Figure (cartoon, rainbow, N blue to C red):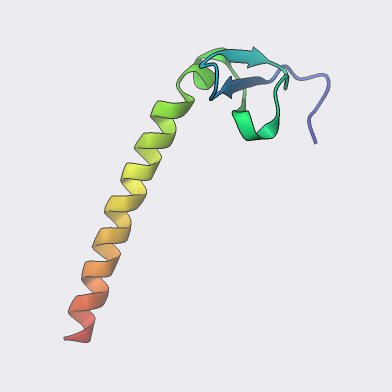
Length: 69
């Protein structure tokens, strides 16, 4: 549950805008973030995390296949 005394920032994936407080439906936003800057970079940060995860998953699969041999 959101803390009403804390300012939260959300990235709206439909509009590409940063919102102060949750203004849009959950299906259209990413967050909450502590700063406007963090929210502004939400998509780039998510893409970077996905790339890291994909690399780690590929390495894990390679190790798993090596263990089968």
